[in-house]
Amino acid sequence: MAKKDREPGTRRGRRVLSGVLVVALLAGGGVAWQTGAAERWWHDLRADAGTPADPAAVAPPPEVDVPPVVVPDALAPTADGTAALDAGAVEQALSPLRSAALGRHVIAAVGPLEGTGYAYEAAEGAGVAIPASTTKLVTSTAALFLLGPEHTFATTTVLDASGTTPRLVLVGGGDPLLAREPNAAPTGATYDPHRADVRTLAKRTARSLKASGVTSVELGFDDSLFTGPQVHPTWKPDYIPEEINPVSALWVDEGRALPGQGPVADPALEATTAFAQALARRGIAVTGNPTRTTAPAGATEVGRVTSPTVAQIVQRLVEVSDNAAAEVLLRQAGIADSGDGSFTGGQAAVERVLTANGIDLRGSVLHDGSGLSRANRLAPGVLVDVLRLAASADHPQLRPLLAALPVAGYTGSLTDRMDLGPAAGRGRVRAKTGTLTGVTSLAGIAIDAQGHLLAFALMADKVKKDKALLARTTMDSAAAGLGACRC
Image 1 (spheres, one colour):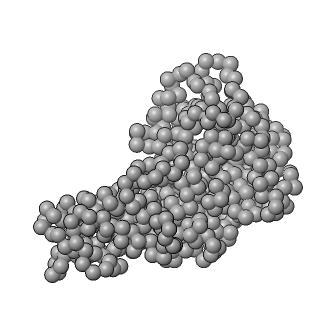
Image 2: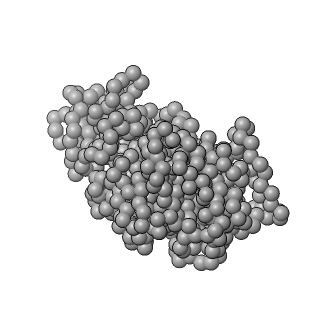
């Protein structure tokens, strides 16, 4: 999406997950459940305090007028993600999709979150459309599946003392959120993880070097973890640097320049320059200019900083639709799968993860991890099946994907959306947005008025330019209708 989008399972395990999801969804709508069971379920789901907090627990902003959700009993009802849905009721809820504002190519799929089949499937499952940023759900799933939610990425320094002047190499480990300095400015996201930074790495490195009697080094940098082009050939040229920067295994602030400077042509060199300046301030002289190199196999590690966990990265990238982080995770998935940290290796990994888990691609083709490519094609049923996989009791490592979904009317890319459709949809729908010129899409989960948990994907990719805002509002109304219906 462009920035302008601005362990075998048991039946009891599935019911626990459903209970968690109903609480998570309704929490956004102002419901306060007076029961410790739901809190314990959510704690168990999170596994430990380091996992991102659920954004649905954030209180709605005061300017949002949300009608209370009336629950007849003191305890929250167990949500049912397996019950068969009323196809007629689902179709009625989605009636806004028939609007001419969405253009002549609108496809969708809706089904029970933990069941099989679809209560509604436009184009009989054969249709594919440009997915835009809903692609990030697929990328995040592959990364969580292959790497695990607690995996982190290290940026290190290694020292080769075999020459006349010791040679220090800054080694990029593919940390998508590596920063120039600590305490980076807040992004406005509901959840913003603590980031590693090169200033802290310089401090740790300088301390280690001085302890070994080293006060002057030559400096190299190694960004060889990722291979292939840094910019996908199907991206529009004006996406750089407005939407994304050249993707690198070593960058700071996602390759963005400091204010007042031009675009960063070489993100790894920019990161190394920032590191060298911080190193000099710590009393380590750098002789000559930094050079691109490959870290010697026998070099000694002298400093290290580590990224947030994959779960935390997914939390943020899904909520705010972070193109750069998605592209880095795509390459990390490729490395975990086959050792190939390129666009091609990442997409091969995505395809293998989906097919290995029984997800029919239905003619889908993806070229990148962020959804910026207009050559991407995705069937809505694939997105529904990805959400079902994340909800499966057999794959608890994928649960962070559901926790990351923005809450309609409250968080992330849905903060100011779904305010014109059925009011009951706000707080009952969580979804990833997708927007490109002529494209609007939504994919996520909803709990209807009867407690049914639904997974849905709504896509339109022939929207006329002058209808873009109306199309987005229309699709929001359809998604909100799923939260309001008795399906």
